[in-house]
Length: 250
Image (cartoon, rainbow, N blue to C red):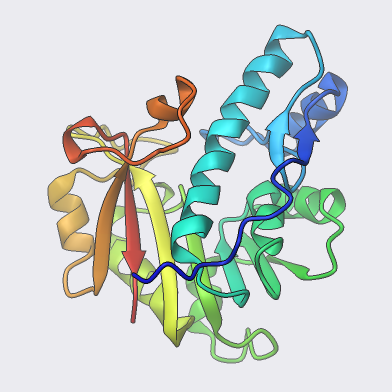
């Protein structure tokens, strides 16, 4: 791919995780068996000025995820277009994506999470939608005002769906793309998946190949531990990876 992606900006600004009571309230509102606590509030790189050890750990955890999402933008988002963020949760990633987009639609099937996202991220270019993506994307009358997206993100979502729905989910992501658009899907890589709540749809290599059969895609591999140890580059060799990163084009 040619190096003409959007330019990163305002990377010196931080989103500070300093209020343990606010974090606690947010967790109480949104924690429903999810695997990732909603700890990051804001559109910029997470940090903390607190000496509280829990907030320090949460800020580091959130920073790792931020750097990964930023790497996707840096390498695959070529223009400031319309973005669909599927499974947006409490909206921190959505707010970050809005910095590099014309408009963003965040969609989630959890009312508590989408309500928290709308209250915490007052960005004019973001619209929030409480809906089940598989139902919404199948309804031609449901998304007329938004239209098709230049970019569709589904980050740590597909593992929460039954494996039997994965191919349909990916094809619906593609159905929401402009002809020259790009979809980005990430999910854990597990050599021997134990598929139980909340990860009922974990991927191993055969599962990934089956879900992606016939799809125009590029598979890359991500290792969260490289970020935990202070690195800026999340990409790894397949044998060392913790996650699949799938770049999908129509």
